[in-house]
Image (cartoon, rainbow, N blue to C red; front, side, top):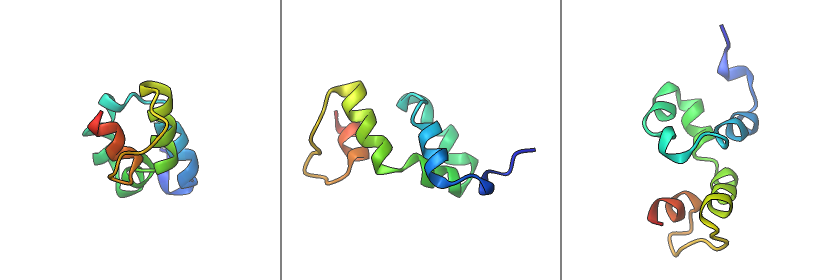
Length: 71
């Protein structure tokens, strides 16, 4: 059995960066607090906004995750 607590949060965030945004909810949010923390990584959301939406600036919300959700 894999213990997610052993993996660096940056690695988990990188892995979740390959999961399409629509597939993150609610599955990845419910696995564990650590997965939730990794899924909410702003660097990954910035990359996702640029890659999937061609958005290069955050909205007034100041969050890449909220920028993605508002698109």
